[in-house]
Image 1 (cartoon, rainbow, N blue to C red):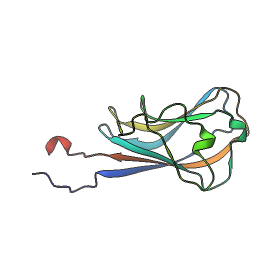
Image 2: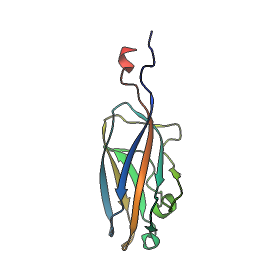
Image 3: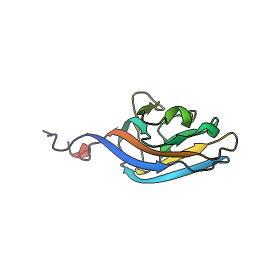
Length: 137
Protein backbone atom coordinates (compact mmCIF):
# COMPACT_ATOMS: atom_id res chain seq x y z
CA UNK A 1 0.00 0.00 0.00
CA UNK A 2 1.41 3.37 -0.99
CA UNK A 3 1.66 6.24 1.41
CA UNK A 4 1.86 9.89 0.56
CA UNK A 5 5.20 10.72 2.19
CA UNK A 6 6.00 13.54 -0.19
CA UNK A 7 3.95 16.43 -1.46
CA UNK A 8 2.72 15.54 -4.93
CA UNK A 9 1.56 19.07 -5.74
CA UNK A 10 4.62 21.21 -6.41
CA UNK A 11 5.40 24.69 -7.64
CA UNK A 12 8.60 25.57 -9.46
CA UNK A 13 9.71 29.20 -9.22
CA UNK A 14 11.99 31.17 -11.50
CA UNK A 15 12.72 34.82 -12.10
CA UNK A 16 13.60 36.14 -15.55
CA UNK A 17 14.22 39.44 -17.24
CA UNK A 18 12.60 40.09 -20.59
CA UNK A 19 15.33 40.85 -23.17
CA UNK A 20 15.54 44.60 -23.86
CA UNK A 21 15.25 44.10 -27.62
CA UNK A 22 13.60 41.24 -29.48
CA UNK A 23 13.78 41.32 -33.27
CA UNK A 24 12.25 37.99 -34.27
CA UNK A 25 12.73 35.40 -31.57
CA UNK A 26 14.55 35.11 -28.27
CA UNK A 27 14.77 32.62 -25.47
CA UNK A 28 15.52 32.84 -21.76
CA UNK A 29 16.54 29.64 -20.03
CA UNK A 30 15.97 29.40 -16.29
CA UNK A 31 17.78 27.12 -13.88
CA UNK A 32 14.52 25.44 -12.84
CA UNK A 33 14.28 21.73 -13.59
CA UNK A 34 10.91 20.08 -14.23
CA UNK A 35 11.15 16.26 -13.95
CA UNK A 36 10.03 13.74 -16.55
CA UNK A 37 6.54 12.47 -15.79
CA UNK A 38 5.41 15.72 -14.19
CA UNK A 39 1.92 16.93 -15.08
CA UNK A 40 1.95 20.71 -15.43
CA UNK A 41 -1.34 22.15 -14.19
CA UNK A 42 -0.67 25.88 -14.34
CA UNK A 43 1.69 28.68 -15.29
CA UNK A 44 1.45 32.11 -13.65
CA UNK A 45 3.43 35.33 -14.05
CA UNK A 46 4.01 38.15 -11.60
CA UNK A 47 5.98 41.35 -12.17
CA UNK A 48 6.44 43.26 -8.93
CA UNK A 49 8.51 46.06 -10.47
CA UNK A 50 8.29 48.37 -13.45
CA UNK A 51 6.94 46.94 -16.68
CA UNK A 52 7.42 48.65 -20.04
CA UNK A 53 6.09 46.50 -22.85
CA UNK A 54 4.29 49.17 -24.89
CA UNK A 55 6.66 48.61 -27.83
CA UNK A 56 6.16 44.85 -27.62
CA UNK A 57 3.20 44.93 -30.01
CA UNK A 58 2.30 41.27 -30.55
CA UNK A 59 5.31 39.84 -28.73
CA UNK A 60 4.39 36.38 -27.46
CA UNK A 61 5.77 34.25 -24.64
CA UNK A 62 5.68 30.44 -24.57
CA UNK A 63 7.14 28.37 -21.72
CA UNK A 64 8.83 25.09 -22.66
CA UNK A 65 10.37 22.16 -20.83
CA UNK A 66 12.76 20.72 -23.38
CA UNK A 67 10.75 20.46 -26.62
CA UNK A 68 7.38 20.33 -24.79
CA UNK A 69 5.38 23.57 -25.05
CA UNK A 70 3.37 24.15 -21.89
CA UNK A 71 1.20 26.96 -23.25
CA UNK A 72 0.05 27.97 -26.70
CA UNK A 73 2.27 30.28 -28.73
CA UNK A 74 -0.36 33.00 -29.14
CA UNK A 75 -0.14 34.44 -25.61
CA UNK A 76 0.73 38.14 -25.90
CA UNK A 77 3.39 39.09 -23.34
CA UNK A 78 1.93 42.52 -22.55
CA UNK A 79 -1.37 40.80 -21.67
CA UNK A 80 0.30 38.11 -19.55
CA UNK A 81 2.68 40.42 -17.64
CA UNK A 82 1.17 43.46 -15.92
CA UNK A 83 2.84 45.19 -12.99
CA UNK A 84 1.68 43.91 -9.55
CA UNK A 85 -0.98 41.60 -11.04
CA UNK A 86 -0.63 37.79 -10.86
CA UNK A 87 -1.88 36.34 -14.15
CA UNK A 88 -2.33 32.74 -15.29
CA UNK A 89 -1.41 31.61 -18.80
CA UNK A 90 -3.63 29.24 -20.75
CA UNK A 91 -2.13 25.75 -21.04
CA UNK A 92 -2.03 23.85 -24.34
CA UNK A 93 -4.40 21.32 -22.74
CA UNK A 94 -6.65 22.68 -19.99
CA UNK A 95 -6.44 19.46 -17.93
CA UNK A 96 -2.64 19.47 -17.81
CA UNK A 97 0.49 18.84 -19.82
CA UNK A 98 2.57 15.70 -19.30
CA UNK A 99 6.32 16.37 -19.48
CA UNK A 100 7.75 13.33 -21.31
CA UNK A 101 11.40 14.33 -20.88
CA UNK A 102 12.57 16.36 -17.91
CA UNK A 103 14.49 19.55 -18.52
CA UNK A 104 15.00 23.17 -17.70
CA UNK A 105 12.18 25.67 -18.02
CA UNK A 106 12.69 27.89 -21.08
CA UNK A 107 10.70 30.98 -22.02
CA UNK A 108 10.56 31.58 -25.75
CA UNK A 109 9.58 34.97 -27.14
CA UNK A 110 8.31 35.59 -30.66
CA UNK A 111 7.84 38.94 -32.37
CA UNK A 112 6.25 39.84 -35.68
CA UNK A 113 8.10 43.18 -35.61
CA UNK A 114 11.06 44.63 -33.72
CA UNK A 115 10.32 45.21 -30.05
CA UNK A 116 12.70 47.56 -28.27
CA UNK A 117 13.06 49.36 -24.93
CA UNK A 118 11.37 46.46 -23.11
CA UNK A 119 11.53 46.37 -19.32
CA UNK A 120 10.11 43.57 -17.19
CA UNK A 121 11.54 41.57 -14.31
CA UNK A 122 9.11 38.69 -14.00
CA UNK A 123 8.52 35.83 -11.58
CA UNK A 124 7.10 32.69 -13.13
CA UNK A 125 5.39 29.92 -11.17
CA UNK A 126 4.88 26.51 -12.76
CA UNK A 127 2.44 24.32 -10.86
CA UNK A 128 2.78 20.60 -11.43
CA UNK A 129 1.93 17.18 -10.04
CA UNK A 130 4.75 14.71 -9.58
CA UNK A 131 5.24 11.44 -7.73
CA UNK A 132 8.84 10.20 -7.82
CA UNK A 133 7.74 6.84 -6.42
CA UNK A 134 5.04 6.29 -9.06
CA UNK A 135 6.50 3.00 -10.29
CA UNK A 136 6.94 1.71 -6.75
CA UNK A 137 3.37 2.42 -5.67
